[in-house]
Length: 64
Image (cartoon, rainbow, N blue to C red; front, side, top):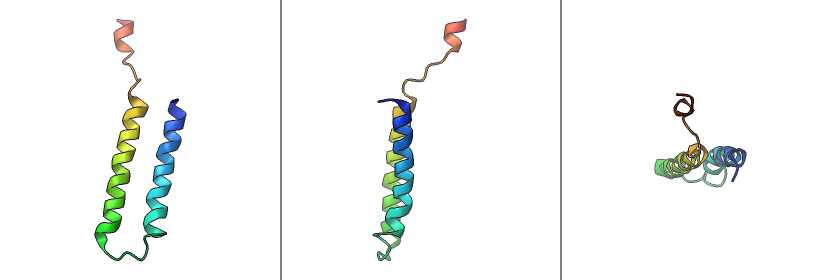
């Protein structure tokens, strides 16, 4: 998958991170509800960032 699609996936996760706790889960009064959601979304964003940067190369090796 191209990098731009992964970037859109990160933005989608950011939107979900705001919409989900303040939308459907707004009646959950336990602090760990939103904490769990944001933790899982944070882990998902980290995983997507790893997928985005896995093909990055160090160009210094090519020029030496």
